Every structure is written in C-alpha cells, then in structure tokens.
Length: 220
Length: 220
Image (tube, rainbow over all chains, first blue to last red; front, side, top):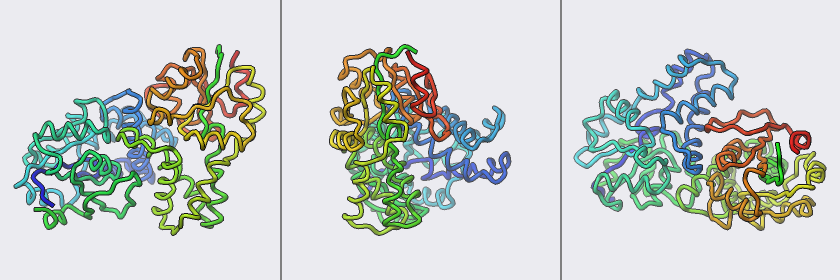
C-alpha cells in the first residue's frame, strides 16, 4: 500500500467518544453507558438526517440535541448546567492509548483530520490532547454545511490538502465512514478496535487494523 | 385542522415491521426480537447513508443487506433460503389492528401512500393486506433513487397527487419522517403507538395520536 498522505476521522477513531461515560455516571449513577450509547447513536443519525433534510446545524448543536434526546428517552431530568457539563466532555475526549505515539511515528507523512466536528470543537479537542503539532490540517465539514458520508466532504479533504485521493489513506473506525471514503476513491483502513461488524453498503475497506500500531507495517 | 388529502407512510405506520419476529424465531429461537430490531435499525441507516453517498439501491436490496448485517452481527449462520424466507415476510407484514376500519372511515378524502419501499414491495404488501381499494396512489421513492427525508421525496408526493402541501396531512410513526414532512410544509400527524420519544431535529408535528382511530375527531 503506497501512501503519501493520511487523513484521519476524529470521533471514535482517534478519540474515544465514550470518554463521556464517567461524567454521565456522576450525574446519573448506573446510567452512564446507556446515556453514552444513545447519545452517540442519535448524534450520528441527526447528522445524516439533517444533511438529507437540508437542515444543517453544526456538530456542537447536533451533539447537544442528541444529548437532550438521550436524557429524555431515559426519562432523566436535567438542566442547562448538567447538559453543558456533559457537552463540554466532547472538548476533552481521551485519545485511544496508542494514538499519540503512533502518530509521532507516522508523521513523516502528511497527516490531517477530516471530521464532522465544528472547527472550534475540533481545534480545542486536538489541542487539549496535545496533538496539534502532528497535523498539517484539521478540516471540518462545517465549510460545506453537510455531513459525512456526502461525497463533497471527502472532496473537501483532498482539495484543502492538495493531494490525490489514490495516494491518500483514509482511516476511520466508523464502517459507514469507511464505506463513504472508499466510494469516493481513497485507500481505506478500517480500524476495528472492538470486534464490530462491518456495514453492508456494497464496499469493503482495503485493510482492517485493530489499532494504529499495526499501520506502520502495512504501508510504505 | 383542515385536510383535503392524507398521505401515509407505510412501514411502521400502517404496517408492523416487527411482524417478522415470529418467522425469525422459527429459524433462530430466542433471537427473533433482537434480529428484528437490528434489522430495522440498519435498514433505516442504510437508506440514509446510501442517499448521502449517492449509492442508491432499492428498498428490497437494502432490506436484504440489513438482514445480512443483523444475522452476521449476532453471529447467526444463514443461507440464501433462510434469508429469502425472512425477506418475504416484508411482503406480508400485518397492518396494525385498527388500520383497515380507520382507513375505510377516512376514505371520503384522497388517501395515498408515500414510502421508501420499492414499487413491487409496496404493491404486493398493500394487496396482500386487502387495502388496495382504499388508496388513490401508492408512491415509491424509487422514481427519484433517493430516500426520505430528502425534500424531493415529499415533493414527489404532492406532484404525483396534484395536491397542495398545506391542505395535506402526512401521517407517520417515524419521528425523523415526521420531521422531514413538517420541514417540507405538510401538516403532520405523528402516530406514537409505543410511547416513544420524538426526535430533536428542530421541528414538531402538528398533532400526536396513539392510533389511527383518534384521527377522525381531529380533522375536518
């Protein structure tokens, strides 16, 4: 696999979206995992639905709305203060343990992030994790006002970086994102940390890895 | 609420998509409900994702793919014969109990279906349920090769029926479909049979009913 540039998805790929569980537990003991799962599922659904409906709102807003849904659906009372405290967790998600070192090793190449996150969310997140110096660019869908896996989003990535899709490896933990990136024409690595099932969307990733550590041996 | 025409969603609204549980239980005892839930969730996701990715396949194909995912994700072995047997259940879903009589009462108005289903699937389903005579039109998104809640789909409904969106009531059990229809400009009834939580997509339905029986008293 000949790779000149690497583009990473952020949420779920470099950063653990379920880092929010602990804070959820503080406010709602015993419910943390369930809140986090509904929250993430609805967050994704709302990005797809708003894109199709032509009702774009940025990822901060969608993340708030999906949290509201999660709490209501579990009949948990909350106020603005609790929600803001949970929402702010999205600015300090933990990178997966191997991520910082693996990125250091990969950075002889052009590294970038292409994410649904709003620019403020992404920049704060990457900075809080101490990873800013590793990336040539942190690119948000917000410029286009539509979310992945709309093809224009992947096009934005190559346009902004000035790279060719064929020379670029796109890495994501999200099967639907891998399917979108592969449809666009990237080389695609699916990072499957938790032994999940890949989606049946008519395309397959080029390689499957369990952590970023495995990547170096697979590309040249 | 002044209503000249009524457009119904099909799956989950008039017809119980979880009618498939029984047949799933035959092949996979104890797993029927779980298969059905993953199957339905992925079926919807794949309609949204394929629409955004520009990889439309018809609803029969998407329903097959999502069944394949559901069985794989539960590590259940299946063959073509089992899958076809399960898939064929989609042609004979049960209407919810009150549906036939309620439609008879409503049919002094223009009644139609607007659905993600492929034309063959929809026509067979409606015919098997003995409801064909009640509808002026059964309209499939397949003409447009994109799924709800893309605005063009709702536009297709009004264009094909020759009606105004403001005079038309759109009825669906799916919160995201209600949100799409309301965004388009229909009057919208959300039929909430199972005490679900409405989605946080920035719009609300005009009325909420628990079954179609309640409708007659609410419109004129």
